[in-house]
Amino acid sequence: MPVEFYYFNMSPPARAAWVVLEELGIKYEKKMINILAGEQKQDWYKDINPRQMVPALKDGDFCVAESRAVAAYAVSQYGAQQGKQSLYPTDPKKRATVDQHLYISENTVEKVVSYVNMPGVLFRGEDLKEENLCKAKDAVQAIEDTLAKTTFTAGQDFTIADIFYYMAIAFLDLVDFDFTEFKKVAEWRAKIAAKPWHQEVWADNQAKLKEFYASKRGSAGEKK
Ligand SMILES: N[C@@H](CCC(=O)N[C@@H](CS)C(=O)NCC(=O)O)C(=O)O
Image (cartoon, rainbow, N blue to C red; front, side):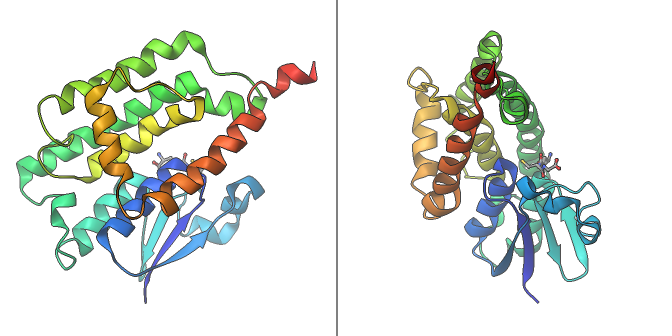
């Protein structure tokens, strides 16, 4: 039975986990859960993810949710057979460094999302929060500082930490944030954007999210 991957194409964490499956090159079956239509609230989906969110993965009778846990599981289970173990290394110290950055990437998302104001824009038609621009810049600067020391964020190899940082700061593309002052980050993003899965899995769906975000941004003000 192939791995089943539950996702929504516009969801950044779902796309980050999806990218890991592509990078691994394993066979999997995509199961789209349209969260805009509330499909994640269906009772049967509770068995896949009790929190009723995307992404989630089912491998036989084992289920795992939370994008970073999905990514870590997929590489732990299939990385060696696919020659892709370096995405989530088994060496305890190397793995701890990747884990460290995976946890930090949660905070990167928080900072960036506080500026882009995802829930406010998408669900209440607000604008971005200019007052949080410094938080977003701090988050990007932290990645810039990391990349001043190593080729990728957790060392010399491309790992799942890179994918989750990439996802986190890609929220800034929704507002055409200018990355030019962050030279290392811009170079590192270009390397990731050259990956074979990037256009179909990441960019095409990010364009849809960008269009959706733009259609909602400031719409509450327009109605007044
Ligand atoms: N921390 C979670 C966040 C997942 C998440 O926020 N998923 C959103 C889509 S981006 C979702 O499923 N929302 C549906 C809902 O909240 O009902 C992860 O990394 O997987």
